[in-house]
Length: 303
Image (cartoon, rainbow, N blue to C red; front, side):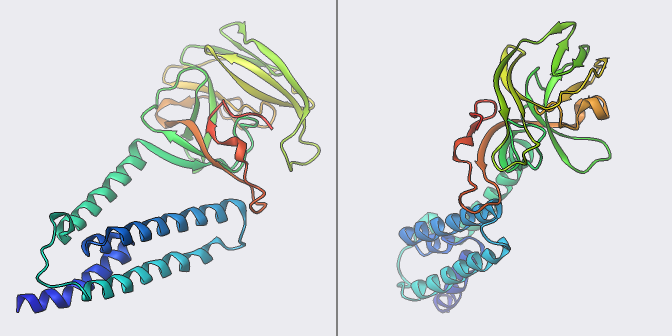
């Protein structure tokens, strides 16, 4: 009786496991080659969906949902047939036990959620205030273990009463005196060293009026590029950063909503440091992928 029940429920269990995660049901069926095949398939479909969504390759990227669902259904039906052909008296290895697989999947899912919430998370840059170092269409990995910035760090944060996520460079720490005049930045009365790099620069596909100079600025013992559009703006005054706050600026100095507009950034609103651009694309099909922009923030070459 137990053998008959096992023979009846085993294909259902294998199919259910593959619906949850293609490949998991084949581990239960001890077919590791098929598990790898379907696992790579679902990973590829996710990459395809990300590419379509970021490049505008399809007008409605959600049409890729049937691809993922179809792969899961195909895996479920396939494992059903495979399990039906297995010998009932075949000894099963410990790693194919359903309780172990389900427990492992749940623990892995919980670990992934915790990793996303507390360690590292991906964000899409949807603004131009950090040009030329970050542009619209960059996908940035944010290290959430680094919530206390040093001068010069590019940080992700939210502002009280505003639902959007901001990304800016921290130029002023608690107690610092910050003054911005034209594109010149003064910290505690000392003007930051700047080097002129390039004139008449604008990002690819941007309108003709979006043009300016590229400089290299030295801040906190490090260097980064900044963009100053034409015409440059006038003085903005001096401010002292209070305790528990920071002064944040965009690298696109004349086109950024930052501490010059909304004031000091509360330290508790910072949730991570932008460290790596892992994907970059604009809505222009596959030709819109910015292959040269993958790498550590501030180390990416300007177009």
